[in-house]
Image 1: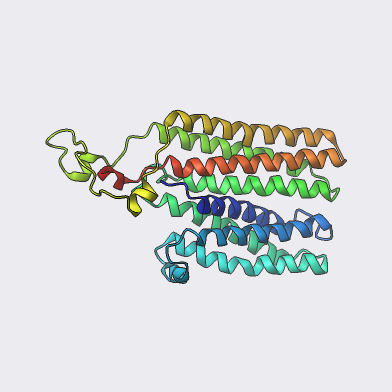
Image 2: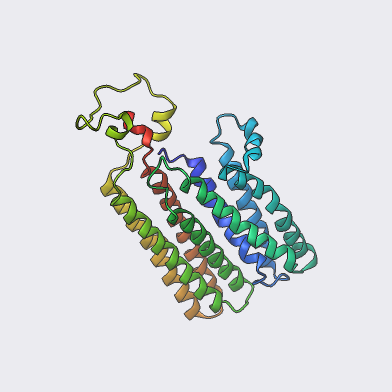
Length: 304
């Protein structure tokens, strides 16, 4: 699949935003602290930026509203409906924190639950596609949820440090979630790279009983939507290198930096270490998202 920058930005930013929003909804940060107010604004900004980025990939953005009507059967529609609904408790929570220095448990917990539901819907958009073997697994939504949760805990740890709050417990949770996220993602990669395609040129054409089928000529002389969006290919050796780089720089190093931040105690050095941990983790997610699309092969490419 073509790794469109708009979709990579959408899945990355929205996951980060909803992860941070869920953590804020649990009331683990001091609502009177300036850093917590910044966190609320940042979470809403990342969510809005991610959703706006997703519209850049639409052929007719002015018709995007029609997707909301298919919520009974479409994970994409469910995601859109929940995204609109979730802004209500998130905005209420942010308002209470910004202007009243208060944490509202009902709005906060509702926002956290809805944020998790949206991330799950995002993962299911891809996991529900039987035509793409790489995505059609329960590991896909599990990765999305764990990456978002780890991002929320890691960023929450940074904002707790900035507010001089106790952060060691949150830091340990962040390390565990980072380890879990990358462990599940590694299992996802292992499954992908040992996968036998369920759809082959033989099954696609129905000629498998005769023998092996090979492409004699492309069905189109010029490129079309299918070849542009679904004809991307990345060498397996390059994908393996990038996946190892993502795990090390986006998983191992951030976890070690968070451990160092715990050991460093209070001070600006601790905040710098945790900020660096967050930035490297985000970079790792960006690589993971690029590979998520670049390594996926749509069954329709059997004809190309």
